[in-house]
Amino acid sequence: MSTDVNALDSKYAAELSPDVTMEKISSVYADALFGVIDNDLQKVREILGEYAEFIADVLDAYPAYARVLESRLIGADEKIAMLERDFKNVLSPVLLDFFRVVAKHERLDCLRAIYGQALKNLDKLVNRVPVTITTATPISQDVIEKIKQGLASKFQAELVVSCKVDPNQIGGLVVRVGDTIYDGSIASQLENMRRNIVKNYAPKTELN
Image (cartoon, rainbow, N blue to C red):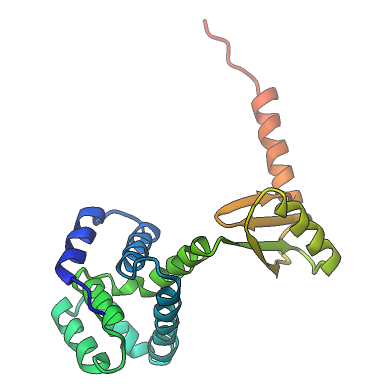
């Protein structure tokens, strides 16, 4: 399967501007990649598997090569030539064409971020929601299950739970569901208390 690079160029040019954030840029490219493969779950898994291998076997394994791809001192045409020389018979036509477009717009520095956004798109496609529980100390499996059960009633999706320990967190817990953060830490409660005190009890200047 081959992509229409000119069509992709038009799409990216219309949606991206120099001042948009890395997250926005990555999201646009990830959406476009899914559009190229028609949101077909099997194709998505194949392409993302190949994409993950490229990150691990090339970008992570050869940092100097990654720096060349990301450098703004090297022209887009030279980078495209590198990709075609090194990966024409390695990468699928879909992914190679996609990397060509990313290179042409000098956004190869976003390859990892684009992959991260693509994983979020995959979660949406399969109705899966990542949940991250962060606590100051490890919590038991029973507590994790109770949190998961509490969330299950609010989210009609498969919840994939992971736990993190952050010793700098002052008690309580922080639960991230997708892109939404539910902060129940003591630090958050203290900050909310401080804001309420400032709002309700701060001296008010009388107007003459």
